[in-house]
Amino acid sequence: MFDNIMLLSMFLLSISLVAALYRVIVGPSIHDRILALDTMGYIVIGIIAVLSIMLSSHAYLEAILLIGILAFLSTIALSKYMEGGAVIERNNDH
Image (tube, rainbow, N blue to C red; front, side, top):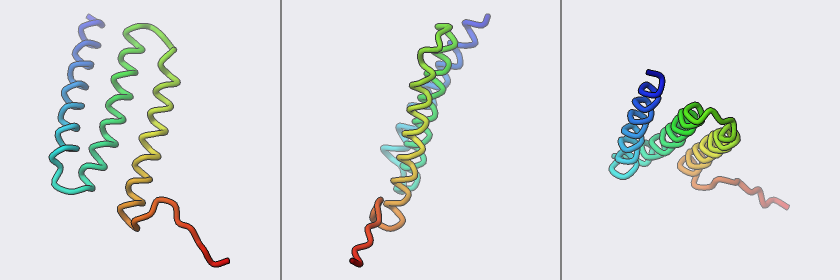
C-alpha cells in the first residue's frame, strides 16, 4: 500500500512538473515564467524526497538542500534583474 502511495505521489509530481514547464514556455509574462521556474525547483525537491523515501536512503538529502538553495537564489537574482536590470549593483563613486 505504501509503495502505491509513493508511486502515485511521484506520478502527480511529474504531472505538475510538466505543467510548470508548460508555464515556463508559454507564460504570458516574464514574472509568470520566474515563478514557474521556482515552482519547478521545488517540485524537483519533492520528487527527490519521495525517491529518497522509496529507496530508504539519506544520500539524497544534500541534493535536496543544494537544489533548494539554488532555487531560492535564482529566484532572487531573476527578480532583482527584472526590477532594475542588474543583479549586482556597483557603486563607482571613487
